[in-house]
Amino acid sequence: MNRTSAPVDAPGADVWEGLVTTALLGTDRRTPPGTAPGPDAPAALLDAAAVETVRRRAGRRPARAAERPQPAPEDPRPALPPAAARRLAMLLADRPGPSGGGRRGAAPDLTELLPQWLAVANARGFAPPPQVLPALLDAARGRTDLRPAALEFAGPRALWLARLNPDWRFALRAAQGGGAALPRPEDDEGVQQLWQEGLFAERVALLSALRSREPAAARDLLATTWSTERAEDRLMFLDSLRAGLGPADEPFLEQALADRSRNVRATAAELLSALPGSALAARMAVRAGACVAIDHMRTAQPGETAQPGGTGVEDAEPAGATKSAPTIAVEAPHECDPGMERDGVVAKAPAGRGERSWWLGQLVEAAPLATWPRRLGGRTPREIVALPVADDWQGELHAAWCRAAVRQRDAEWSRALLGEPSAPDAGGPGAVSLAERAKLLGTLGAAERAEWVAGFIAAHGLSEAFQLLGVCAVPWAAPLGRAVVDALNIARDAGSYPWSFSGVMGLAERCLDPSEASRLDALLAVPDEPENASPGAGGYWAEAFQRLVTTLRLRAAMTEELGGA
Image (tube, rainbow, N blue to C red; front, side):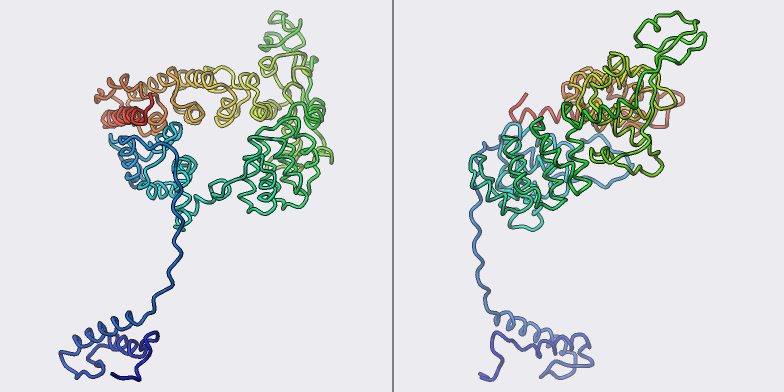
């Protein structure tokens, strides 16, 4: 044995480099050591490389054994029923196909059923089979909309896995406190320690959890360190006060109006304006009220009828008479003074927006809606909205009232601004866009919301209904479901292509009550195409309705497998 060879922990690097160089140059130009040139040289090179590889590997010292991870925590929830577990595995195994405008066919889109499956499983309180957790985490990693429900269902073992795989670290960021156990509200010492020493995510989670149980305690905890927090952190902490917001929060929020951060001041003002009894709301009511008033001096021309919803003797005069018609007059602010800025009014208007209209909109939005019946002659919200507004201020005024109704969750004002769903202009007098109408609908109860949207679809069809359908409770109430199906059937009979309604059809697959499937059987056949129909549209519609029916029955089966009706 050659005693002068390199130690095992330093194998001959020169030998290996020589073999690599020979392989790169070729055995015709350079032969391995101890080998004669000729046809056997390539095989000799490979043999030498194999021997050197074994020697290099044998010469490595074993690495220090890593510390074994702690066992995964127990999940006390009941296990899934076997049929539901099989269904989950099937949903997780499905992958969306390539995007494009091609034909979808009649097969259900299983990826769109996974969120609904998770919602039902979480409502039933089931735990996942351990073997599906990696696939569940992979699915949540690729879809941020899926993460809250997926992580709730995955439970504590998902966090255990996330600490072992960097690809799943999002689960630690999404979980309250990064997966750390939060102290109980009565554990004063633990709460104080985590608040003083915890990571930012842990502190946000602690404040949110405490706010949901003891709003005053959460606010008092925030006050202890408020002056030393960074501006961006103050903004996040302040936003947590939305939950359980009440009059007791007003003194703290009033102090925040003097914050050095403009964003913090704006958020504090927004929260205060959502408290109709706050001092800020009263100040805004005075400012907004000074800008809006009833003007009885306008003279109607012969033949001009009274505006609907008006009150007073002047409204009872017959048409054709010269009379005084009540009109809303608007005088927008001429300046944005320091007091307005302190109360959250942004002085600089966006590009293309007039300063005075910008200031007016902010004042009206922040004023309590109860201001206006008192200010405008005791009229109801519906009567106020029906009044004409002078000098082209109606759009600005009504849009601000829309934002105020949404912020203050005022259903009566929302109804007035929405108007009747069958209105000829496909919208209410105050809603300037479908997005505004959708927000106003969000202040109404689920049944009333569905009834309004059903009326809108019956009057105007589906072309403008997509955003409105998105705010309706799932599954859709029977009148709304029937309105959607009837409108789809009308579109089919008209001979248009179904992908013009693909968004609504996709919503129907997820939101239509599964019990409606039997009503759709008559729509599965290929219809006779009218003379001016798009070529082949009937076949596409038959496929679309087949997919809808199959999806509804699959949803019914999923719910049954999870033990629910």
